[in-house]
Length: 181
Image 1: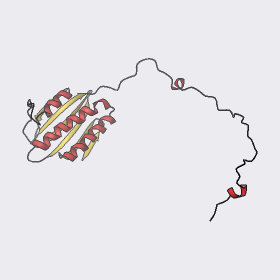
Image 2: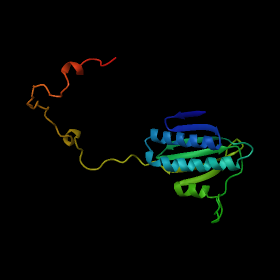
Image 3: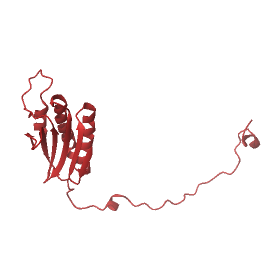
Image 4: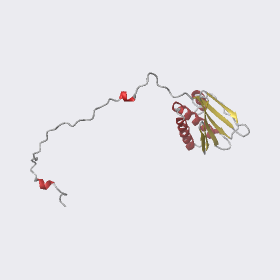
């Protein structure tokens, strides 16, 4: 289920690999709708890491809720699940094949954290990104018509036409009509 308002979007899902890709696309589309295109890649990567953790670690089920909120110049992406265990960031060894997700979330975000859900069983893991306004072009305004040269309408150019019949060796009557049939 998806619900959203002007500055808030909520998606409920089961954190399965196929659904994680769908949520990446929803997060990306929401940020583009808010005209925050520069944040799309970092937000999509961050939500992928958080949902991967739900898929891998959450017990007893994989049902979760993703919230995206734009408030006070900051986008916050939160993933809520029913597992009460808070995640712990640790340093993965060079040969370990997992365990770097929260370090990645920390590196790509301005802030991140985890907290127990109030009045419910479970937790919320979140990260935030500064929502920079769209860049404003610098310099004087330029009229678009000043960039496009104005062209005069084309005038017909006289062309000499030779009206004599071509000599092809084929009678004219043989080249006209539907052909053999």
